Image (tube, rainbow, N blue to C red; front, side, top):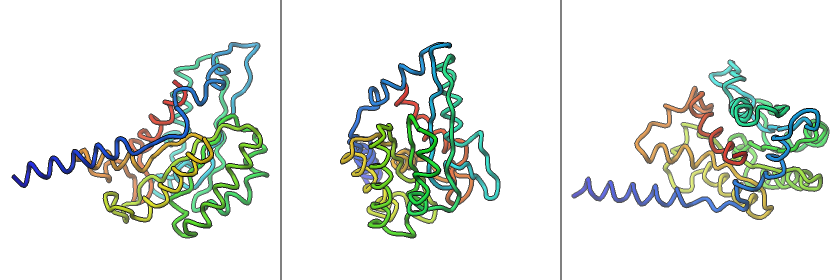
Length: 237
């Protein structure tokens, strides 16, 4: 009886998380203009800039100090896009810095991010924002979002990937709180969302060990980056 209850409970929790995302935009059409640009052949095509702004995870840190650039999700995304859009010229521009939080990222946003004229901007800072707190993190994220929207840049926000010192199944843990705040920012500002934290949580609820997707305590391995990549690619399909 206990086993049946456990299965039903797990199924209910999984169902809740599977339906927890309420994106502000539809991934199937949010980037329609960009997708059309990616199909254009030379000599009428132009370079499409994808800018990834954040901390060590998008920067490509695996088991510190190793930086596995080509297996990180920005470059997995590039590889996947080139398979879909063989005529496109795509720049992946990585402005992420290991150890940085969103407050520092916001300070250099105008001079080091907007200068690249992003067509699509990805922001991934939540893991390190635990040190600055929800309120200050929200201000920094909102500032970056507003500056980018003024330039008609398409934005995709990412909730945190795991830190194994935090129980991913504990309700309302600190990473859950930051994930919820990011989801609200996406909803309120009508921008894209990749709920990385929920992707890893689903894997655990399905019976997998979170460590299977991690290279160290707070950095995903190639399989972990692939989970994030697969969600990002849905915006370009």
